[in-house]
Every structure is written in C-alpha cells, then in structure tokens.
Image (cartoon, rainbow over all chains, first blue to last red; front, side):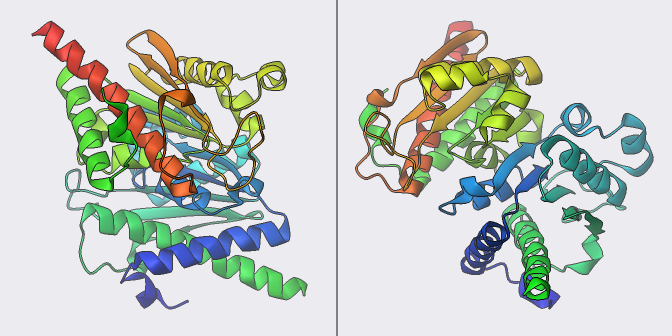
Length: 180
Length: 180
C-alpha cells in the first residue's frame, strides 16, 4: 500500500474503498464492528451507507468519553493515566474490548485528536491510532505512518476512515487471493 | 415545528440544526447519547462533527443486529417477535436501554428501514421510528408524521437525522426560554 494515496482523502475514493470492504466481507461471510472515538461514528456510518451492509455489520460503538471507553470496552483508568487516551495501548485495548463484546471477525478501533482543541506538544492535533483485529491478527497503525496535507477536523476524521478501510481492504484481498 | 421543512432534507439545514443542538446542550450543561439502527452512526457522526462536541456527547451505540440491540439495550426477543424490530415499542425500548447505560440527559433512538431491501407491505421502506428521552420525557415519533419526496437510502437516513435533531432543538429551546 502506498501511504501517499491517503494523503489526498478524496471522498470518491473513500466511497470506493468502503464499498469494496463490504463486498469482500460479504463474499467471505465475515462480520465487522467498530469502536470509535475521534471519528465519532463516521466508520459505522460509512459502512452502513452501503446497500446490504446489514449482512456484515454487527456493531458500532462510539465511546467518546473515557467513562464509556471503560464501561463498554474495558479500557482501564490506569491505562489511560499511564499512556494517555490517545495512544497505541488504548487503541489496542479498545479493539480487544470490541472483539470481546461483538465477536465480529473484523474489529476496528480509532482513538485520536481531531482538533481544533485538545492537542499537546507530545500528542498534537492529527495524532490518530487505529487498532485492528482482522480474523485474530491484532495490530495498531501508528500516526507516524500517515501524513496529512492539513490538519482540519474533517480532514483528520476522513483520512483516518480512509486509512482504516484501506488496511482492511488490503488484508481481506490478500486473504481472498490466498484462498483461491 | 413545520413538518414540511423536513421534506426537503438540505444538508445545509442539517448542519445548522446539529450545531444549534450542540450549542444548546453546552449552554444548559446537558449530555447526549444515541442508539441507532438504520441511520448507522449518522447521528453520532453529525454531533461529533461539531467542534466542542466532546463536552456534550457521551455515547453512540450503533446496534445494527438484533443480537446487539438485545445485548446493549435490553430489547427482548419477545418484543421483536411481537411488534417487529421496526416499531414504536422497540424504539421506546431502545431509548430506555440507552438512558440506562449512558445516563445521558438527552437520548435518541432510531429504528427503521432505509432500503432498498427489507420493506414489507406493513412496514415499507422509509418507515422510521425515533425514540426520545429528553430530560426524563420519553416519547416516540411515528413515521406517519414525516413525509419524504423520495425513498432513497440516503434521503431516508438524512431526513431521519434532521427530524430527530429538529425535535431535540425545539424542546431544548423551549426549555431554555422557560428558564430565562
């Protein structure tokens, strides 16, 4: 995957990649769930905008507050205090919690700072961690891996969504090819 | 409120009403949560697209499958069997479950059929029930109350969102005026 393709964030491309992900999931008989913070429901909204999404979409959790991250996903106060709510550790913890409560085959978590407020020197606006559990493979994409031409709230949210779906698409296509 | 204003579903108007709702909630120190089915996260996405939403937005649950409606919102299998998943009773049950698990001051639930598939003679595409708990006042808006010029998937989803936020805006404005 070329990271440059995510630096433009064309809505047209985003629609294409989401539709492709839904079709790939359908073809493989897999389900998907999302746990979102800074994207605020954008991922689940995009998935369900595709006709036929009900066959693959299990659950979307938008746990905006720390209290809800803890209640629904089991992210602990200690973890948040130690690593910060926008961190690799919390993204992983969110995706693990999501896997447990949804049992979906593909789980995606997002935690980040869409701005304009909330940024710090250590964690500036635009920092987003995306956690994945794709058929048991768990990993987190670090914010260093994607570059944005500007850091507007919408740009960050849409780029995070496009990046997340791009990863899922690539992994599902590989899996489909391997099985054929 | 004039229902005709919802028959057009201009995105510009939708942005305005969502921003107004977030500002009214902020002004009154209230929180909001959503439980969505056919709108698929659109309501939470719209709320969180407004800068400063983190001060008011507690939780967004997109319980697309019946299993998740039961697990997270306590909607019973018996209820679904008796009334159908797209019904006044299930919208009310969803909003009650949401109130219980989020404890937000304003809770909104949506259950409906955005199509193109899934419609029946009794419950055609475009049927949407919207449940509210606004500071303890619980009620459901019936689909008869709003008319759509066409029944495309997007039109239904966006009109449901605009309708839901319109109701919340109106009630919060009344409450603000009463308190002043």
